[in-house]
Length: 101
Image (cartoon, rainbow, N blue to C red; front, side):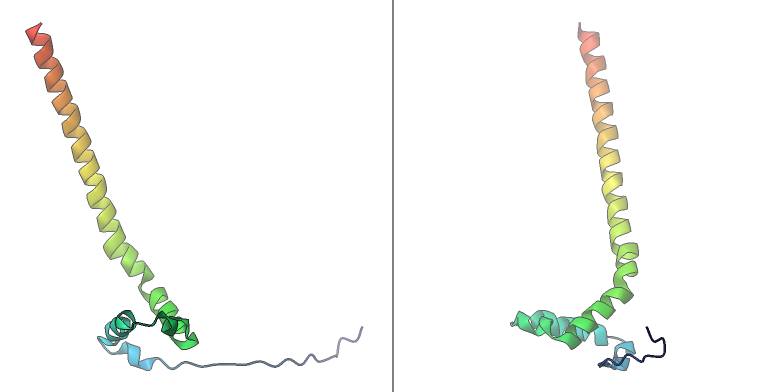
């Protein structure tokens, strides 16, 4: 086998310039325009798909940090609060029944 052999392949490189996304409010306008569009075939466009994936990569951790974690905190607090007061209520009912007997 010859190690000096050169392999040639066709390579297609596509570059998407998204400098405009750094301006405040641009991402929101694009997301609103995509959400308001009636035909969902527009989401199959390679450029739109790449753009949505990039926006998701940039905002994923912020969504987890500012939406999911506070939601889970409130949910777990509510569950804990409910369980504690149900136990207290059941304990008080048990004490009242014991006194009546």
